[in-house]
Every structure is written in structure tokens, then in C-alpha cells.
Amino acid sequence: MLRALEIDNEIVKRQLINLNRIEQIILVEQRALGDKIMVSNGGGYPHNVTACLSADGYNVGTRGGGLSTQAVNLVRPSNRLGEDISQAIEREKQTVATLFREMDAAQRALDEQMRKSESMLREHKRAATAERQCRERINRAKSEVQQVRERLLSDEPAKIAALENELETFTDQLESIKTQFRDHMAQQKAKEHELHQAEAGVTLIDRKIEAIRSQADLLRQASEKKASQCQKHSNNIDYWTSKRSTLEEKMTALRRQKDEAASRVAEVEADARKVCPERVTIEHEPRRLDRLISECRARLEEIERSSSMSLADVAEKAQMHIAAYARAKDELRGTIALVSKLKTAHQQRLQRWTHFRDSMAMRTKLHFIKNLHQRGYTGKLEFDHSQCTLQPKVKTDQDLVSESRTNGNGAAASPSRSGAYQRKDTRSLSGGEKSFTTICLLLSLWETMNCPVRALDEFDVFMDAANRRIAMSMMIDSARSQKATQFILITPQDMSVKPDADITILRLQPPARSSAAA
Image (cartoon, helix red, strand yellow):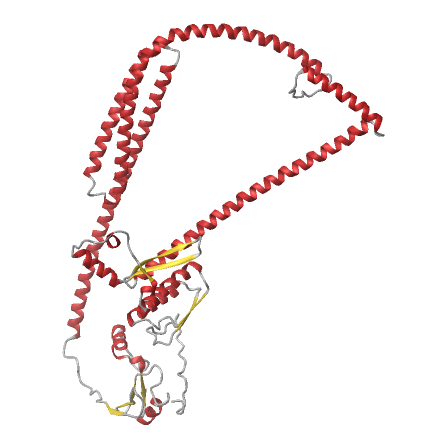
């Protein structure tokens, strides 16, 4: 009937499809042809056909099968619309115009709220900048106080009074900084009702201000302690000055001895370079060195007498072995460096793999919670990577309703109710709840693994109509969001979706049973 009708208004066409299902009604010329068509599917209606109308005014066939014919009252050519359509259209146009005006007003209100939000963010940034500047000033004051401490410990007693003045100046600066922080806190409290999103930052600023106040108290105490120590330092200055003069005289004598010894060492080194251009590190006493030299000469003479090789040949062979040893040592050093780099690379790859595994687990958890919210459930996934286990826990909507009723009655909640959030174990769920939870888990794992082909068999056997409708909607939305992935869903139940450009439904014929088997 849909192909036979010519409908100019798209709204009227959709209403006829939704209410009267004209795409599933067939039209024939004669009643006899309709009888043949309506019993062609084993005595029942053909697939996707709900009615058959003939041109001579009959409704042919029944849903249960068999031959049945009913006369249809043909429409007489008369004006069936009593109301003027132009007035209805005008009313609808006025309604649409009103809705557009309301939408414009809502958009203007939204823009105003966005401007207020941006203004609040700018205020928050300015407060953060002021806090950072105050912190920098406090750090500079600390560094200047430290410099004062170092100057107090130096050997310049004439500057003690100046340092005390600087200390008082720094104390005044700290008081000024405290006053600025008090003003800053007053401004923050005045804008608390406009900066709800910045409450955590304001709390952090309060803690930092308290820490700065405690540090300022400590600095004040330290300044008082330093003032008491100034007198003690002034008493010790004379003692250290006299001791310094004595040490300078000793240092002058030691420098003179050092210069004399350096001149003698230079003469000895000049004589030694005539024998060996490079200086050899000496770790023994001169007498022991003379004894070692004598032993080496005696050993060399004995080796020359007992060996057929001359001393030059032995030296040449020794140089060859020394060069080979140096090459082997360089190769070993390079191998050790390579092994160290490989260990570092392996550790980095292991850390990246651990981060990737944790991110995939977190992504699976978020998709699982999102899918459960489609049905009004809550839950979580517990990953134990060390034991290689995955434990889903779900709390249904009935549990949430009962918990809210318990809290609303004002009864004393037990630790299990009022404490940490308790979720059901999957073994305590019903068959439909288990099937829906399994679908949510599979969709979450598919989103993470990115498999090109995904198939499910008899996934809705234990589901009721509500869970089946939500599960089918979730899987179709997931399939449409992933164009490069093929989904294959097998179910003995009636599909609650209609064919589309990206959805193909294949129905198998019911099994043929003989009369003897029946």
C-alpha cells in the first residue's frame, strides 16, 4: 500500500506508517489472488505482511491462518474533514514561533551563564596569581633572612647594627605579607557563593596561609633567638680575631715551606722525565722501591739466562698481550653499557605496558558503569592483575530503592549500610539480571579489545522484555558507533528492532516436524 499511495506531506506519511503499518499491507486486484497469497506460508501470513485488501472491497485471510474473508466499507467520495485545515496550520505556526522565541530566550540565558562562568574562572586565576606572588615574596623574605643569618655569622662585627635593622625591615615585610593574605582571604570568602567549583582550591589556599603564618611565627622566634645570640657573637669576635692572626702567621710559614718543596720537586721531575716522559704514580716508600727495583733486575737476568727469548722479544710479546687485554676490556665495557641500556629499555617497556594495562582496565570499568546506568543499575569491576582475575559486582535498582527507603525512615543504619558502598555479588542476581550484566561486561570488553568481528548466541534467553529492549538498544548503538566492526547476534526470541541500511535480520524457517513426531 505504501508504494501505491502518493503522499505529499511527510508527517502524514509517517503517521500512517506508525499507526496503520501501511508498509505491511498488500493490495491485489481480486479476492481469489489474495486467498492464494495469504496461505502461501504454510497456511499462515507471509513474512512482514499483516493484512491483504482487494480492489473489490474485501479483507482476505486471518493472522492464525486459514481462509477468511471480510467485507470492507469502501470510502465514499465526500468531504470527511469538518474543520478548516488552514486554521489548524496557522495555530501550529504560532506554536512553533512561540517555541522558537522560548528557545532564543533560553539560549540568551545560557550565554549569560557562560559569561558569568568565564568571569568566575578569571577571578579564580587572578586569585591563584596573587597567591603565587605572595608565595614568591615569602620565599624572597626567607632568602633575605637567611642572608642576614649568614651575615651575623661572618667576621664583620661593624655591620651587626645594620643587620638588625634589616631584620626589623624583614619582620615588617612579613607583617605586611600577612596583612595582604588576610585581605586576600576576605576577598575569597566574599566570593564563595560564586566560586563553588573552586572550593577545593580555596581550601588549599587556606591551608597554605596557615602554614605561612606558622612559618612567620617560627621566623619571628628565630629572629629573637638571633638577637640574643648577637651579644654572644660580639664577645667571641675578639677571640676569633686573635686566633685568625695566629693562623695567618702559621699559614705564611707553611706557604714558604711549600714553595721551597715545590722547587725541589720540579728539579727532581726534570731529572725523572729524562728517564720516563710520563709520570708514574708511586704508592710505596723509597727504600721499598729500591728493593723492588733490585728484585726486578735479578729476575730479568734469571729470565734471560733460562729462556731462549731475548728481553726485546719478551717486551714485544708483552705489548701484544697488553693491547689484546685493552681491546677485550673495551669490548667488555661496551657490552656492559649495552646490557645496561637494554635493561633500561626493558624497564621502560614494562612500565608502559603496565600503564597501558591499567588504562585499559580503567576504560573497561567506565564503560561497564555506563552500560549499567542504561538500566538504572550501579556496580563496578574489580581487577586483580596479580591473580589474573576479574570480579564484577552489581547493585540493581530495587536494591537502591530499598536502601533509599531505609535511609529515609531514619533508622539506625548498620555499618554495612551506612559505611562503604556494598554491591551485590553476581551469584545473587536473577537470570535476567545476570544476562544483562553479562551483556554490559561483554560490551565493555569489546570497546577495550577492538575486535573486528563480535558474535553473541542466545544472549537474551533469560531476559524479560525491558532488559531485552535495553540490551538490544545498547548493542545496536555500540555497533553503529564502530563502522569497521561486524556484529553477529543470534537469538531464538523475536527481534525488537527493524531492518535498516546497517542492520540485516535473517530469520530461519521453523523446523519441519512430522505428524508422527507430534
